[in-house]
Length: 147
Image 1 (tube, helix red, strand yellow):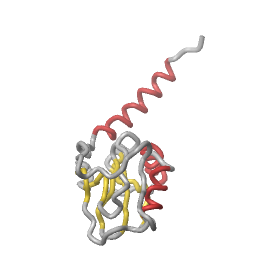
Image 2 (cartoon, one colour; image 1 turned 120 degrees about the vertical axis):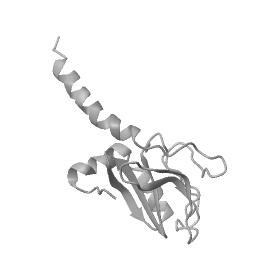
Image 3 (cartoon, rainbow, N blue to C red; image 1 turned 30 degrees about the horizontal axis):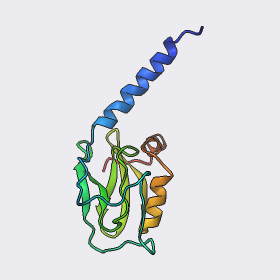
Image 4 (cartoon, helix red, strand yellow; image 1 turned 90 degrees about the vertical axis):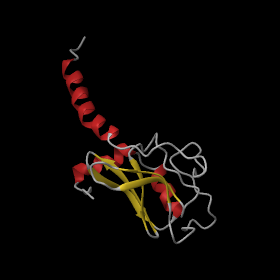
């Protein structure tokens, strides 16, 4: 039987890095009047053309990251059928910025992009093909910012 000491050490170090980032941000609970069509994945999109549906976006289920001060929302009114699944993206959300759909994750005191688009369909695709883990891995690539 192999010694588990090195494995336990590596898992302990990984947990000490991951857990503080996971508990730093809370988007709050879902509001039944603002939830937008979550089924089994990160997002759904029921719009007919995949484009943004209004010009003045409103965030839904928003919370402020204590490290960056940025407000992220689980949903946005411009894409009413997309809801960022808090199980797959617990520290992530829409950053309300005009007609742009800017999705970010709060990762260890930095903001890492899920993606930026003007299409609801593309936003849903970006969410379906990633996870918070893969988004936060961008820290190692220098692709994350402090605001």
